[in-house]
Length: 274
Image 1 (tube, helix red, strand yellow):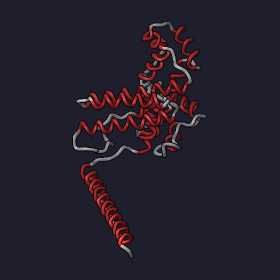
Image 2 (cartoon, one colour; image 1 turned 30 degrees about the vertical axis):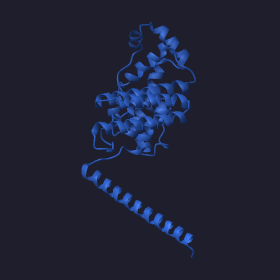
Image 3 (tube, helix red, strand yellow; image 1 turned 180 degrees about the horizontal axis):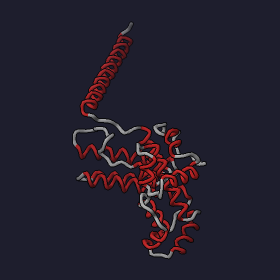
Image 4 (tube, rainbow, N blue to C red; image 1 turned 90 degrees about the vertical axis):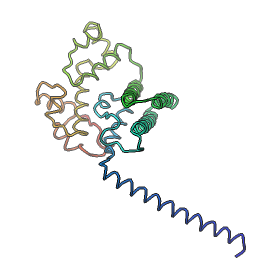
């Protein structure tokens, strides 16, 4: 073996040894990390719920997003660094990056998505408190979702209809009357009913019921609340009425839906309509 070949062989041996050392160090670091997680009770958010949340943003389902939304720093969030505020910032940047890519996949132009991403990351960098971070997190999620809702519907709603949609989304856990919506919008019931049906394609009462059932289905799939508790939370007049409406819109009863879709993979667990 000549000198050049000997040097090459030694170089290969050296690289192999360095790789083995690197992998050994990585395994040690992972073992230490897993041990510390167990000792400190740290956990990560369930994969199915996390992916379902991102999918709901991508699909523009504002009601589902609000059902699945979890503030940063709570149960299920890993520890990325020892500084609490910096840890929240890291998680927020990750969330922004994930949502940006899900929305691009859902039809948002890369330019628009990345511009929104840049703005919120810059805002995140300037945060000095947990409250500021949580506020930016929520506003970012809602803005991306609303934009995806517009994209999915193929047009931009008028300001009047947007205000009606937002009101319904914010009050799903209440008994919503068309007259109350008209009062808030400062228009007559006939006017908002006509405009809403013209732009959304269904009357207001039907839309409200659809969104309540959609929220109920997601709560059945991704939470431990009972059918009775969900019915009460969403202000159905009775448990029997809730079951009747759920079966009408979904095709099966709430209990059947829970048995079929609870804790299943997020890609297999989308709401199935009759």
